Length: 88
Image (tube, rainbow, N blue to C red; front, side):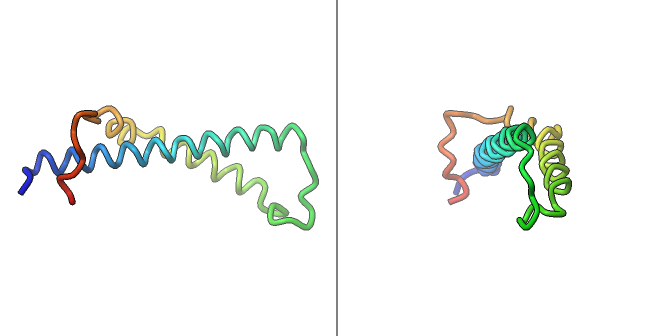
């Protein structure tokens, strides 16, 4: 049975991979939001009607969340040589 340290490192490495995926998704949302703002289309009759500001706020909140210390600490603790199988 793997040691607790190996299990923790598996969690850290898997978590960091997920964090990177989330960060990339937020970057896509932010880029789309900028382009959307430039074009400024009418949202009348769409799912964005009445939700445009709430969506922008949600994207900002997601960015603030992934910029918290806990996320960056996990990312910084990755050990690339760890095989990540201790939790299997």
